[in-house]
Image (tube, rainbow, N blue to C red; front, side, top):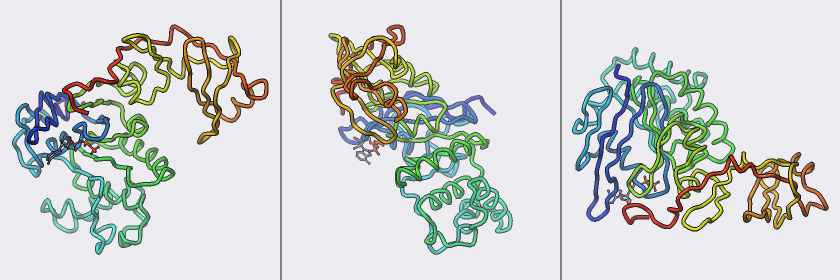
Length: 331
Ligand SMILES: Nc1ncnc2c1ncn2[C@@H]1O[C@H](COP(=O)(O)OP(=O)(O)OP(=O)(O)O)[C@@H](O)[C@H]1O
């Protein structure tokens, strides 16, 4: 096997006057999970459709496992695609849905069922194989869609916003399951999402897209820890970006040490999901931080009007301010 499961080289795609992809390159090493992350309209789904073979690029190449598949039809690419609306067959059982892929690829019924059962076991649905999918919860249906995609044992699994149809609680549960599943799979995974938390939770490589281009890529933890610009930092969920002329100072949450240094006034304290969100008037500018309930109890003083903290300057970084200027002039 080539070291790269997927190698996208300088791909361009336009629709009329819209330049959806402008020279996109990315590579996915075999057996790894890459999240394609970016805001609505940046070109993520377009890139996924090109990789799947549902559309073809105007220029550039798509190489899978060392084979150029740029103009190959979907069935000549060893991949499965799970859409946002996973479109299961409601009249079929869980097993019937999962066996659909192998059957469509011409495998005899018995072999298709063996593969479908193996895929259902992977997503912990083996007990429910006789149920109709209309009798399943949203999370279970999503797992059937995954099993259906995995049953043909593709080399590459493409997922379009896999968790966006689920509520917050289910999403959290499935995130953990998916991460464990990806680690067990032989397949490589390319996953499209606009949700940075999902990308962080599920991937070990990340490509951050903006207006038809990839603005940063690398290992997920590295991209998150060292964004290249203010826009990347903001999109990745960093809240403290303090204006400094044409640059911004990124103060990562890890740079803020509680219970050390000076007491600073709290300008706002709002109860959040699992603690308190604070705005603090610091000498450098307004800082936002999230305290767990226990930290809030310990660190907020004088009737919760002050918090004692120290910012580790060595952990902060100056970044170019590109918030207002998307490359290519598109939103
Ligand atoms: N078939 C099409 N015809 C015309 N314009 C299109 C077509 N498909 C996509 N576009 C445009 O190309 C750009 C990229 O769209 P794309 O769907 O790839 O973005 P996205 O990042 O996946 O967005 P979302 O997260 O909202 O799905 C957008 O400006 C979109 O309007």
